[in-house]
Image 1 (cartoon, rainbow, N blue to C red):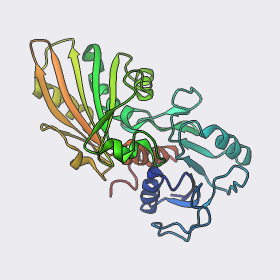
Image 2: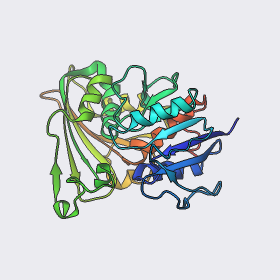
Image 3: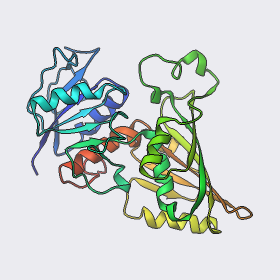
Length: 310
């Protein structure tokens, strides 16, 4: 297989650093350019395939090479100007955006790897971290749901990014959990657009760095036992090695610094046909960087998990 060259914009962010680590271990991808707003001119640490230096991400100074694909690991509402610049330089380049900017744009292919067809577009939109978890929990049950599904989510403060803000303020988070975007969160909109339009989602941020834990409460159209629910998920994800189904409730310690999603804790209230269970992932990996590499693999015609599962 040909080794493909990748450019990474936003390489010094939390997610950018995780992508860097994954590409360092990838047998068929070479990171040949990496851009940062705060570390331009500095050597890139943690990459063993060559001597890289961070280039300026400033649009006026942006120097593009002959990469096969560009990964945009930028804050929301920043992608368009870079997309235009890259396509003017190389109209054939594959673009993979990790922000929310193109998750609702039809020309861009939105893809949760375990739930979607192979990549068929040169413009790829990576799913959001919370939205990934909710869709992994919903998809096996779509034909069995009745009415609204309620999701309670809590994430580490890395999900708020590295720039100081209200959701990663250490004083506010000390011994605390903060709720935010109580209705109509962007990832709620995302799930409604792509998977199931009757969800109620409330996100929270806790005093820990990484990881997402979501509890889902749903009413089923027909009665179901806990074992039956688990069997549905076992069957649905049987050939998806990054999705781990278990009887016990998953916890963040299982998921942190892994590329796996853990789904389990299936319990049923038969009186009202209620099913409740949980899912955990690492928001920086399976919620972002891992899926970016899975989607790059698919775009290049490779198996999704190449370079991720050894």
